[in-house]
Amino acid sequence: PFSTASGETVRATLFPGDGIGPEIAESVKQVFNVAGVPIEWEEHYVGTEVDPRTESFLTWESLESVRRNKVGLKGPMATPIGKGHRSLNLTLRKELGLYANVRPCNSLPGYKTRYDDVNLVTIRENTEGEYSGLEHQVVRGVVESLKIITRQASLRVAEYAFHYAKTNGRERVSAIHKANIMRKTDGLFLKCCREVAEKYPEIVYEEVIIDNCCMTLVKNPGLFDVLVMPNLYGDIISDLCAGLIGGLGLTPSCNIGEGGICLAEAVHGSAPDIAGKNLANPTALMLSAVMMLRHLQFNNQADRIHNAILQTISEGKFRTADLGGKASTSDFTKAVCDHI
Ligand code: ATP
Ligand code: MG
Image (cartoon, rainbow, N blue to C red; front, side):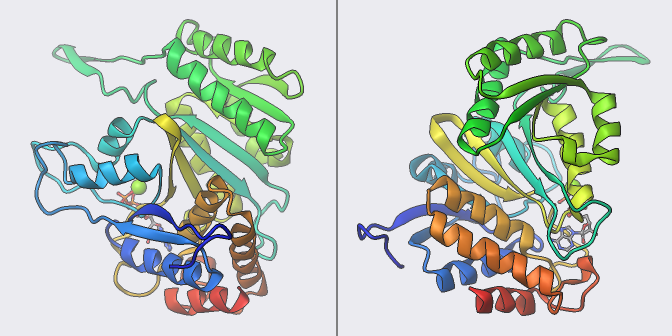
């Protein structure tokens, strides 16, 4: 491993994951090597048996590795079907207290989509709302699902959003909601956002109803800056935003957890249809890795890798099939390494 100016090497956890995961994780490792990133990976694979300590195919040791390192990169994981275990993503979210999901969405110069001025960040509450998992049957033919909104989780994600805006030179935070109908739940979410907004007078704060937000996003996405919202809205809006810039092969994300954990991950799934064929686009995972580097304040390496990715895509000589090109995963990776 390389080392920093002070000679230290940072340990980070790597989950290559399933499907195309190992191929695109390999791309990230190559790019990090060429850029001289002083990171030593602790690699953990999804197990083949349930670990009783986590009730999941993720081992206790792999979770401990993230808790210890406080920083990691995660490839896509497909949860095996069957009873008696928790979904892998749910295990990670609960065990590591991953309370916010941050997804920057920027138009890629040279890769033409309907808009070329998308530059926004969605910040999604990640622990409660409609995804609390509290559903039951009341009587035959009638089911109920509980949407939980707490002051604690809302303040925490709002605080993160404003802090993010301030430290990343952003000007505006929009809280996305449906409080005109969901008066109590989204009402409390908004109340918490307003309280936090008062502590950040330099950041413009606005509230946008979710349906209006969708229309504006597809008509004029350049109007938005930072968006913060409850879980379900965040799930949907962040995919909509991914579509604005060219799809799942391109969009990175980062999960923020308790005690300052940063677990970066590509937004896409394990893509079993193209796994093992050297066809996957590694851009999303590479850009997620760049987010991880910025979190670690390795800004120099982050910039070099980021620019190399942008140049490779913009030149258009090596593009993977999802972007209409003919390059393989390794062709594209090599082109990025050459640019570094
Ligand atoms: P999962 O259940 O793991 O989320 P999914 O089927 O819901 O999987 P994805 O795995 O994200 O969703 O795949 C959706 C489509 O996008 C597939 O056709 C897949 O091949 C494609 N895709 C996803 N990620 C990539 C990528 N990095 N490069 C190229 N194509 C991709
Ligand atoms: Mg999916």
